[in-house]
Image 1 (cartoon, rainbow, N blue to C red):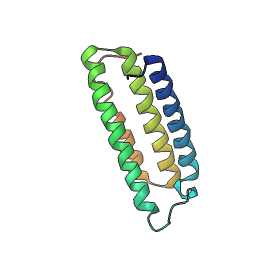
Image 2: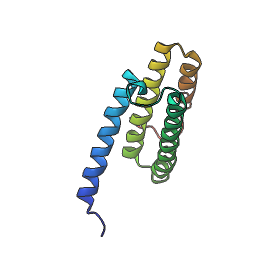
Image 3: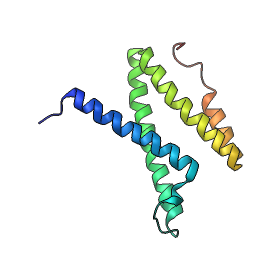
Amino acid sequence: MMMNSKLLMTWFSVVSVILVLAGAFFAVFGLGVLPVNKDVLLQWESAIYGAIMIGWGATLLYAGRLAFRRNDIELMKILLVGLAAWLILEALFSLYLGVFFNVGVDIGVTCPRDFGPRIT
């Protein structure tokens, strides 16, 4: 039996809020606070980071293509908020931790901002 849309939206919202809160917690305190063997922690963090990048990239690819195909300004703004949160926070943490090349990558990703319609 298929979930009704209100229940599905509630589930999606709860999972999303948990993800944002967990992300904020781990961005500040790191994954080392979890009961994970320190010998595999870096590999595990890398695997999680890779999985998040795959999921986020797939979301941007499919939702972004849909937004541009439909010229859906509201969806473009939503995607822009997600991109801005990601790039700004990642650049700030990279700057704080001295990973300066990544700050450059984040700035470089934001440069082609003249593509598509103006979303003000």
